[in-house]
Picture (tube, rainbow, N blue to C red):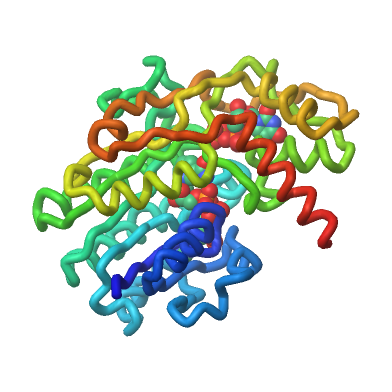
Length: 319
Ligand code: NAD
Ligand code: UDP
């Protein structure tokens, strides 16, 4: 049976991936230090016979001594705070998990000739001057600002992947993930969809930062999880950097209005200061993902938001 390690397993993407992999009949070992992740995300799978969970810091070298990790076939390295609110509160931990932590996971892959997917980010492009963003665009990241600990750590994580691919032939695949959402994001995650949906459903103001004209392109989690697994599977993705995201672009204000309409909420939309270095535009070119993975997203924002809102509502009723 295929043995798969998922770091960041208790987080938003990690827990969706764990659930999907277990459903496909694989053995899954989840590692997470529970800094932003939650054990509740394992509801329904925590007693699965093929699932083992370790509360462990991936930046700790002892991670390589965990006996359960021997003979692993595949590693998904997703561990890292992802919301600006959380990575800015823990900059050094964010740098460590994406650099040292990435190197440990690459060592693991090297030791057992396993394949590895590294979760990089659209933030590798910073505040882009090329729009939309193809993988060949080298980005516009400010090293001297509050987003740098995340953006530059991810970029250095990519560099470490490059070295393991070229020096040691590790089958590494780097995915640059663009804004991904669904239920399962913490209510207090701070990212825009979880904020707007929580605010709309609890009658609070929807907090738009800046004038709301900045854009993002939102990918529903199921589309993302499918892409991560295709990247792992396909030899064509070895040693490649691939954008994973939905190329349909919206302004943040459009998203606030859509959430208001779909929830039927009477909440007001209010405007607040734009955080420093907030990228003005973001949209992936996904030609490479189409070509190498045969992948493109199928769930549009309206459909994804309907599913997300329903799940948040159900969760509120259950609480
Ligand atoms: P998340 O915060 O929900 O999950 C991250 C998980 O990593 C959490 O469970 C956290 O506890 C764990 N973690 C953090 N540091 C760790 C460490 N040192 N050791 C072990 N576990 C650690 O975030 P997410 O949205 O699920 O993001 C998952 C990955 O995907 C991250 O690497 C993130 O940078 C990347 N990504 C996500 C998005 C997105 O839109 N969701 C976009 C771009 C990139
Ligand atoms: N944003 C917003 N209101 C919120 C949270 C976020 O207007 O309550 C904006 C934020 O300034 C950014 C966009 O929404 O322009 C996406 O923010 P998020 O933190 O979700 O992800 P980012 O792409 O910035 O990492």
